Length: 203
Ligand SMILES: *Cc1c(COP(=O)(O)O)cnc(C)c1O
Image (tube, rainbow, N blue to C red):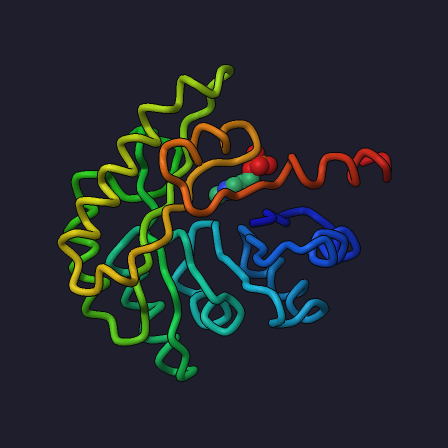
């Protein structure tokens, strides 16, 4: 998936014509402006923290919200999706390394949130998302990816609809190869795709 935060629409069009099937945005407002130009032909993923006052717009734009991390956000998003008569795919974001500055639910609290989300009528829980801590050497993040993959399998095996559990979103530009080796089914690439176009414009 191409992560397009801060990337102008003309550059997004380049990766779409090169075959990108999904784009990820961090802010609802920014996504809304781009959505008005690009439209729904590509799959839109929300990656940033979801504020409850933005759920309505988010539910209208995004096909998947990867950053669900509280019962409150889940309830608000479910209601908003219902109001639009939409079914939204969601991932639960796990704060896999228990970093204070990061969003995401604690690994040990994830199971309870899964149970809450499973009751939501307009949300379809597809799996988990996490960001590994920054590491100068990508191999150092392997234990975190391994831990997330183990949690994913555990929760999938307990799920009411295990067949829906087929998205494990982990890995970014610096660590996607390790993430894939540990079982990622979706990697989120920003810099690796767009640094060259940004440099070409002198940004
Ligand atoms: C920005 C961002 C990415 C992409 O990171 P790069 O290192 O630029 O590939 C992936 N996931 C999330 C949640 C992000 O905010």
